[in-house]
Every structure is written in C-alpha cells, then in structure tokens.
Length: 394
Image (cartoon, rainbow, N blue to C red; front, side, top):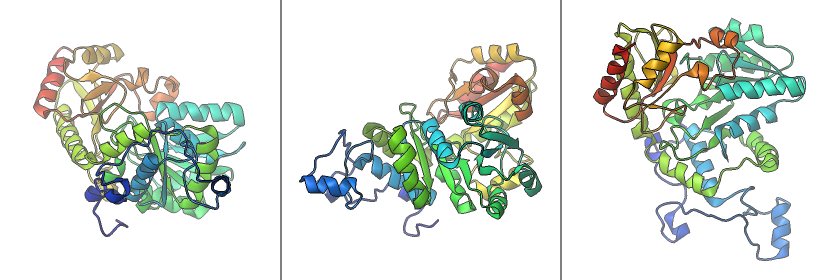
C-alpha cells in the first residue's frame, strides 16, 4: 500500500479530516445544500476563475461528496476520485472522456450488459468501434490493438462468467502502445484488488454494490491520476451532470466502514457454496475464481485477496429448468444486483445481459443455463439448504 500509516481496513474507517472541523462530529455531516454563498462578489469571481479553493454549487463539488471522493482515492491508491450518480454514469463519463469519433475500444471478452449497450450506441452514433479479446496472453492483446485504439476496458472478474484477466500483463502491453487501461473493479472493491498498483490507469466502481453494501443507494466512483480526473470533473461530470447527492455519498461513507468485514464474509460464503455446488449431480459446471483447481487460480492468487462474493454455475437442463430452479428458491432472492447483505440470484441471458445478441452471449460464455449468485451474509447452511431443495426438483 502507498499509505504506510494506515492499513486498508483502518483507512476505510477513519476520516481524512479532523472531527473538530465539524464541531466534533465523528461522522461526516450531510451537507444537503444545492448552492454555497460567497462572502463577497470578488470571492465568487475568484472561485469561478479557479483562483481560490472553495465550494460553489453542489454539482461542482460538495463537502460530503468530496470526503467520499478522497476516501476512495486513498483506498485505490490513486491521486483523485470522483463520485457519480450511478455506476453507468461513471462508465459513460470515462468512455466519453477517452474517445472521439472514429476511435476503437478494446474490451475483455465479457462486459456488463449496459456497458455493452453503451458501446453499441457509440458505434452507431459516433463510429467508435470496439472489439473483444480473451486477453489470456500478451499476444492476444497485441493482436486486437489497432492504430485507432484509444483505451482498453476490462472487467475482472468478468460479469457473469467470473473469468479473470491478468491486469499486470495487460498493463505492460498497453504501456508499449501508450494506451490507458480502465478496470471495472466492482466485483472486488479496493479491499480485494487494486488495479492501479498493478499498472492500470483508471479504476471505476458501481458503488451501488459492495461499497454501499445494503441495497439502498445507486452510485458510481472513478479513481485515477489527478490530471485526467481534473479534466473529467470539469467536462463530463460538470457538463453532463450525473453527480452523486450528498445523502447518497453519506450512505457510501457509512458502507465503507464495514466493507472489509462484509467482503470477508461474502467471500467465505461464496467459496463454500461454490465447492458444494461443484459436487452436486445436477450442476454441470461452477465458475468461481477463488476455488482451488480453477485454471486461472494462479492469477487470482497474484492480484486478488480472495475469490470474492460472486459465483456462477450452469445446471443440467435448459433455460426452462434454470428458471424453474430459481422459482423454487425460498430464502434466496431473485434480483439483478449484487453485494447486498441478502443473497441474490439472477439469470444473465434473460436479465442483465439480455441486450447482448444471443450469438455474442454464447461467445462470452453466457449460456441459457448459466445462473449468477451473489453470496450474502446469511448462514451458509441456510443458503445451502435452500439451493439443495430447489435443485432436487430440477
């Protein structure tokens, strides 16, 4: 870690700012205001000219939001963080900032459905093309880089197939070509994986998931070098306006305080369920990066603290059997998010990745019998009893 004074578990809890600043308040206050007053017209002029630090308007900056942005930058080992109103607002802002008409984006072979949809829109409207790569070797990456490639966009683990990309390897190749590497770190959070330490340039999160942790907030976060982030703040964040509210920033600050404890439990439950499912006669295949024997386990050990809290599996049968299995669950909830205290399950082919054409879904490894499960914080024995009773009827 770059911050030698505090280990990451401590840095998640302790504020950068002294409590005295807010009359002794241990918790960061919610600055629920749209605008800020100036002591004089001259002060307002200086702030708008960028000659003086200070708040102007919450779309341009807010003390509660700024505390969150500073905290995530520290945790990811970056120079500056920015908060957005959703994970897709963060993804959109970064891709808009890095691309122009005619550019090319190289992606991991598997993306969240809405990221895929955004790239499709870019291609249709602005002739910004994209390609997918398995990125298993340096040669795989080099083969897909073109003179127009402006960035490499990676999910790892990939949603929902849980495949792993060797971030240090991709970063090495990208640097040969002067191409920035963007990593969606939603599934891992900075507690389990730190892409910037591995040579990547920009890291982003759907903070809706593990960072929030309670299913009650929608948010996105981006971290990178100060020069890029300053430009992102003054262009995409300010002018497009997908900013996070002060109250939602406060919820995320609260969530960060327990993130490491929750991620440990999510990971333990996911690992346990993956092993049990792997031994079940009605489960065709299990995809969990932290399971010993996984062909990418050596990469997991190199760049992740644990295998994380999400797993996927294919059951024997067809789409009909997969959906019937889900309908028979009694404790586990059918929902498309992840990272909540509750265990959630969904069918990617017809839910999160329904926008992806069937041929492309199959190429990504998203079959009609693939099911994604986000392990919650419940007793693993109760979760297994629920899965087992539903599988009996398949």
